[in-house]
Image (cartoon, rainbow, N blue to C red; front, side, top):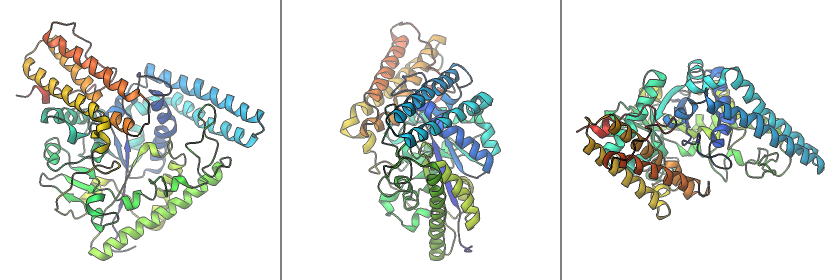
Amino acid sequence: MSHHRGPLALVLHSHMPYVEGFGTWPFGEEWLWEAVATVYLPLAELLAETGAPLTLGLTPVLCDQLETLPGPAGERLLSFLGGTRREVHAEDSAGLDRTGQPELAAEVRRAGRDYERAIETLEAGGREMLGALAPPVDGGGAELWTSAATHALLPLLASDAGLRLQLATGIASHERRFGSFGGGFWLPECAYVPGLERELADHGVRVVCVDQTDALGLGAPEHLEPVRTPAGVVAVPIDWATVGLVWNDATGYPVHGTYRDYHRRTVHDLRPWSNGGAPYRPADATALAREHAAEFVSRCVDRLDSYGEGRGRPGLLCCAFDTELLGHWWYEGQAWLRGVIEESAAQGLELVGLAEGVERTQAVERELAPSSWGVPKDFTTWDSPRVADLAFQARRAELRTVAAAATAGPGGGEGSVQALERAARELLGMQSSDWAFQITRELASAYPLERVHAHAAAHSAALRALTDSATVPDPAVRNLAPDLDLAPLLAP
């Protein structure tokens, strides 16, 4: 091992907009049920088995939903897995048999067992495990991070009070669920503007990820250097030269012909084909995932050694993915992740939690450019003309909420507090970055627009209860932001 070889920090950003109870097929809570079965449960088991020191980001809004699973939402999840998923696998496998495609039919039946295993895990206590997320975390070595309450794009918020509402509510949620906040904070969409770190520092944030690819250039050695900001928060660049080995829709590992094709589907949206067009063969794909894991680790070793030899000190390689990529979008992704964990030990590559890696790596001081990890790496995905109405609608609602809170003041009666809580929660629902992303990428038809408009209407109704003697609404929006912190809105 090179004397100057630094460690690899694998960061998994786990997130789902609040969809529990808001719609079903094809857009709505079934997104969450699919992720539970194909991503979160397998990942919890992997972390418990390997004890790998990964960085696991859990957005508060995802945890809000997982927390409901011991109740009626969990019954709907089991009904989906044991009813809908079981039925469509049976129907499509029978149809493929009838049309003379037995290998495809067999693969559909095999894939159906993924959901049967999820049912078994849930019935054995997995709902409580997911609701708290403590057992898999304690069983593994994961470093837990939180994020803003509902994954709002922080640079686009309209007011300091609105920014603090997102930060304080998200961190309070994490502290209540996990007992403490270690300072690791995922910036939604990695969206950063200079100065943001001051408010982050005031809320106890110590480490964030940023994407400086456009500012530094792909593959620049500076991507392996944590940056200490004037407020003391350390910003760690994501290294897209490494991430791109996986997350590239033209050349990344998941597009290999042996892997399962995400896009070609049966009548009921099942996927028994490989990217190459042949029937999917899981044993071949799993073996390839292990080969790709070994190659990935080798490339990381080369990257770190090159930096260490050139700079005379260890660097910190940060590789971040959406957790949902591993298991849902890329079916073999968690087999690859397990391989990376095992190959790192075999090839002498140390894995660390990102905050730990920062403590062991010399940070530099330099200016950071405004950026995101979007395509392009600015804020276009969330503020282009195509989604401008959503952005302005959310900003108007934010300013109306701040003004209403100032008028009501901290001494308002119980009805005023309830109305303000409801307005704040509806605002948080509107501010999710997912809605603009889905519209920009044409991913969910009219669903995101319907969600934003519904939250906006309920928000206006709640504010009317503050000024027009309208009926005071229930302050809750299902389990959205149960740890809502109104202090940022009520502070003088």
